[in-house]
Length: 487
Image 1: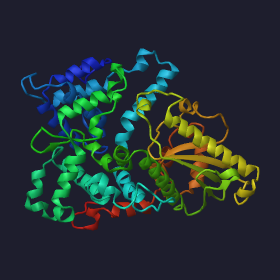
Image 2: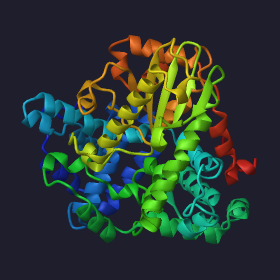
Image 3: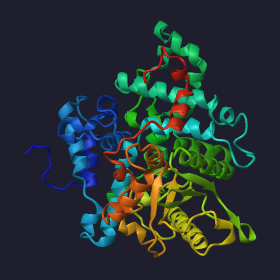
Image 4: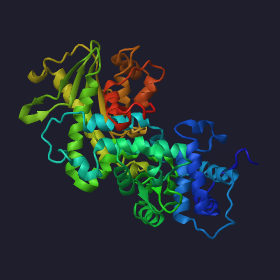
């Protein structure tokens, strides 16, 4: 048979048993080496395109959770790994069980996007945004949580050094088969590195934030499960997202999924750390900061006037930003929300908090559009002689938010409202060969493209550098020392 390998659907039980045939001490280093080899998007060129980062991460999770050291003869070949990745690719889904109903297809789209797309985000943008957001964006309100020293309290070092350690771990793991050994810090060639970030800081950050042992991994994997449906097991939270390195698989620490290292230094990684330490105040102040950050991005548009939110009757507020082009008025509402685990499992629940926030954002856009159209005294500076579009900007991507099945949870309206991520907006504001307003108008005029993510409308466009992201990236330790920078 073998091309490659299954000509049928595979149950989760069969796949798990296939992974369990190999001892974790042998299989996990092979997975880590494969992840390091097929880094970023190079997995497209891997054998039969089976070495996807999400498949490798799940195979590692299964081995850690269900594997033991008393099975097999201790051997594991490349073909063994390829066969279990092929089994993963052939896994059945509730959509098949439910005979392809509209609801089951919608759930499948949510699951697949939540499973695959987070592994395809730009590491540069994610890390650059951290400094640009937390350190280079002035807050609109006086903070009580994100004050001087918050990063030292949360991370045990400065935010810049924390991201610097993240970058060091990512590069080191990619070049060393998924490993990082603290003993390397004592080697002569690491002297320059440790002159930038002290060895003690590197060691403390790694052990405090990046490493997990197998027993703790198993407990967390069990505690975080939301469903016992075997069809959904692979879509559950993987503890490697919180701690991408394993102890107990010497030498040094082992990263079975090198793709999960960089997200630790992203705003999303900081969000979870901050919530665990400071609670809701961290989330609220991060949301306020994110709103101002999006305003900074919008002001990069060369052919637009950007207005902040407008306060009108009884202290009510418009959308967060109003952007006026010669041919379009864009109403921008900012939400520092992210897809919940329920959405990643394919549960399209109208009571879901994240979906409620998106619905509220749309209502805010529609209300502001109504105030502009009715010539409310506080909005007379906004023109009424051109189309009005809405843009809901989220901190993390909702990859299917513009699809018809997800639009059903929104209020019915003929107004064009697009949900986009911060990353998509960061690209939109750099388009050089076409005005951003024209990109949005042309996208909406295409009935099919309007249901896709905003990023698809930017395919093939000439994008310039985003100066805000560049400033964030250049603030990190390795860019400040040219002899250590790799780009």
